[in-house]
Length: 207
Ligand code: TYD
Image (cartoon, rainbow, N blue to C red; front, top):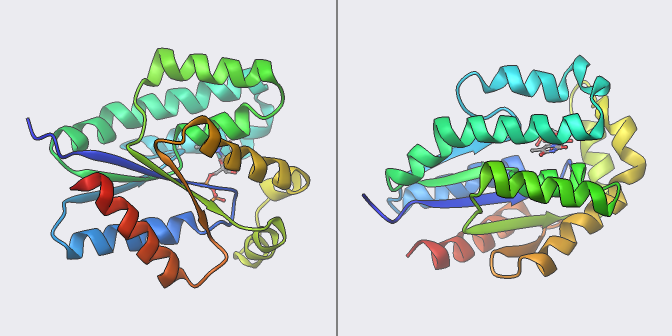
């Protein structure tokens, strides 16, 4: 079985630019001849849209924090089994827009108990950690401007807006918790500049 499969994740608050950087990193790695699969959470993998609807659609406001943690974990397990682990086993580089660190930050946010519960669920049901995680960091003001510019706006922002600074700090703290795999990247720059940093750091874990 090839052992060159890797999992690279991109994390950060809403509006940080993860989706664009996921695409640019994939293009840059493919140009160098690597086999790359891009994916995302919540909702990656076949039928993942059903789970994404549960987590971000109209139903989302009904879940308790514990139920939310379980549903994000269930969606991740489905994604892992159906897409991420098979691709890694085939020697591909999987680039995933959000992964378990998002659950740590968003669902683990409220209390130490909540974070402990998320960590336990991860150990029990996921057990796969990325080889490299980019935490794309931008000021909250910029995040709010970018999300407001998105067509149709974003209903969830009303809920998250006032918490964004805490969420940002939550992502930054991951660097202390997982220094071996987390790299904080300044996302308030030209996208090409960010992309070339991400490529250079990715090549360090790929070769
Ligand atoms: P996403 O589609 O990445 O939205 P955006 O492009 O705005 O960043 O994620 C949708 C929302 O789901 C986002 O607000 C973060 C949230 N989320 C969690 O709360 N927990 C999780 O585990 C994941 C993966 C996402």
